[in-house]
Length: 464
Length: 161
Image (tube, rainbow over all chains, first blue to last red):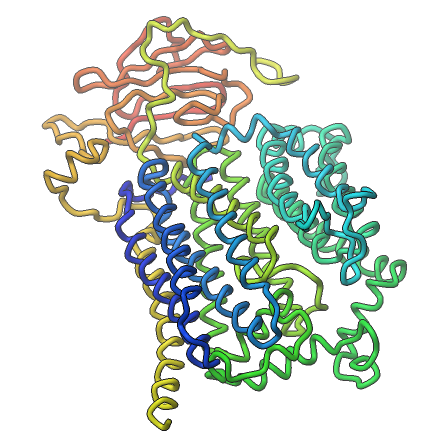
């Protein structure tokens, strides 16, 4: 763990400049949708742009006060992606007569306010370490919620991942992504040495003791349970990937990568044999262009329409409102990448992917810079979960891997995903603030007059 | 009508250009942070900046070589360096420590390193396994000279100019 020197400069003005650019991009996207589809620039347009401006500038001002040294590029990147997503959803609404756009504006506001609250009230990300086991409990409860009769929204599009309270539906698994990362970070940062050193050695492999791994196994079973009981392949891949990467980062043993890949291979083959919905997904992926599969219910119609859309967009895209992305089922959530690819082309899609890559890189940069193990692991976990989610859904839409129903972060219509991702942004900003801040002396003992506290050394390790 | 479609086409490409301007502005903004291993140039502080961010003011250089860096030479954190900012540093396993030692032989709040005049002093905070300055256990606060190893558990730190 080498210490990287970071520049101790707040750079909030850089953020403001980038924010203006991001807002201009959002406004132009929304404006072009209205212009190209012959909609007048009514009050809605101005109100919505004003909301986005107020929220992001408000966030920026809160950062000036509460996290002066936070990363300057993350917030603008998120605002740009979110604004683009809102424009695309609005464009699809016009084509289909839906009102997903209004809901998305509401959720964006709510999510941004939640993120601002996190930055405002969370004094230090290290406080979260106290809630290691509460996070595990919360993750398990959140994952079980969609199966509880009464609040379960039942089987939606083949997966039981939604809960419904009154008129609102919510996907608790999105929040579980954050609590699980918190648990792994807290648990691994305190028990890393025990996992690493205690236990039998068999050949080149150092096997950890069962009691050191027990909480990890609970978490892992929860994520496998998602696959079995909720039929949600994407989320289960996400949790499993998060689990493997965090163990790998905590122990820096390359063997975890091979163990993980082996488990994925074994688990993949087993799931293909055992679960009909997994078999179906893979068959549809392999034979996507076969007319039998295109026509079948639950077949490859969606993914193939998405591919046709991408092909129609070509290099430069058809322009907002000029293509027909609304032919694709779920064009505004799972398949929003295909909609963007059609109307903005390869050039636009690559800009979106670059923005994702930059966001993820900044998350890892925050992890490298921060000085405490918990913060490092949390930032790595959150950034990696974000990266894996982008890969799984974009890979699925472009038929690189089987399509599974994960949301496209910040772009796709869906409140729970927006909320979770804005909170991830807030946590990463907090961690990057700790990483870039010059050495903080506020947590220091005031002077040598304070009585020295004597703490025993940790656990069974003998004193020399 | 022709004019309108021309405008629409220009705006269509304009938007793609704007997206890439956004991407490259972000890359330009983070270019400074990609410098690893040496302190990136931040330029001279103006009087206003110094007033607003007093923590940015660097300690004025002295004639005698002064400790500016704390380097971990042994132990789990080997290779870690910390800039000394003229403020006291808490060493230990506790999360509130300035340098969080990933060392099972260190206490939660193990030792304190603080500046006095032009020198840095180390003081043991009642740790279980003791703090050793150049091989002898500390009983009171002692000055730390450049390059003298300080042992805390399995970790050895040194001050460097």
